[in-house]
View: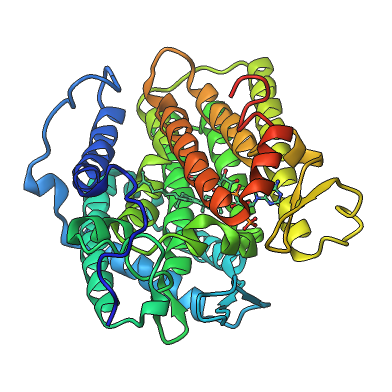
Length: 417
Ligand SMILES: NC(=O)C1=CN([C@@H]2O[C@H](COP(=O)(O)OP(=O)(O)OC[C@H]3O[C@@H](n4cnc5c(N)ncnc54)[C@H](OP(=O)(O)O)[C@@H]3O)[C@@H](O)[C@H]2O)C=CC1
Ligand SMILES: CC(C)=CCC[C@@H](C)[C@H]1CC=C2C3=C(CC[C@@]21C)[C@@]1(C)CC[C@H](O)C(C)(C)[C@@H]1CC3
């Protein structure tokens, strides 16, 4: 049986904060979905109407959603080009993960392409966003409940460092088990990268197709948003192995926060800019589009450069690409980079991600705040995440971490933060 009442400090405002977030996050998602299609599209105003049960519930949406999850699960189970090992666990073992996420993206694209050429009305998906978001939220609640119950019979070594406070609301939100698996099927790893991320680009594509049907051709702004976000998702799946060292996989349990985040929040709120553009077309000059492409390229280079530098260094510090970089030794035997990207700020990858977030909103113009929701939310998420990571690194590396902070004083934005 799992031990109750572990002493990890409570995060997210404890049980009260967790309860509030479980109500607030779905409410915000539905607010955004409703406001994006309303005339005034005011982020801070009331939603234009409150949807009744008939607008939220559709058996077709449920069927479509379950088919989607089943399809992505089947792709996950296909033979992988590589099996990667995760970080060492409490019991000194390492889990193995299939690296076939990019393959799943390509197979999905082929299947959707075949469907569209056979007359599948992809644009119709945009009419189903509300009921789809509703079934995704319902799935996240049910799934989190099953995961909570599963953790009751998990060995103590399988539990996450947080999420085992003994308070059921808090533990349900944060997640109790670190890597819940059904045989070799890793639930958290699957959800983090497949149904939500690939679902996000599919929703974007459906919005582009619908715009072409309504207005004759997709707008330049819609092309940019689709292209940038496809690059981001393609990159995540191409470098899939890197997700194994993120705090979601190595530290956080699998509970409502990640289940809802992965399955509902990512596809339905990350596609907000494309949703906004379908209902509020925005003119975009070619010169402005070029500047926005440049901003996205700068953000992507920083994001990819920083993530790859750290991953290469963690895999093999003597790799010629990173061997010349300056480092600090820590008592754990691991080293910290203090030059290159990681000598500029302590989270250069967050900086790149934020610059890209800006580039995704700019094609929507500056007349509305709504398309900038992602940038605002993401800034808050990364500032909070940076503080959590800082705490974990201080615990792991002690004095060496303090020395790193002294030498690299800025967290995310040079000379500002
Ligand atoms: N689009 C989205 O919604 C989201 C995107 N992201 C993105 O996910 C990516 C991963 O983020 P995340 O997991 O939060 O954090 P990071 O990839 O930044 O990983 C942090 C870890 O890196 C290691 N590290 C920190 N500093 C150094 C250093 N100087 N030298 C070597 N190793 C160091 C430490 O782990 P250790 O020493 O143990 O290796 C630390 O715990 C980011 O690019 C982020 O932008 C994140 C959240 C949401
Ligand atoms: C508000 C809310 C519901 C919070 C949950 C947070 C999640 C939405 C995010 C936590 C970490 C994430 C990561 C990605 C997507 C968003 C979530 C799940 C990510 C898969 C996006 C693509 C990147 O390239 C990435 C693989 C580095 C990234 C990993 C973290």
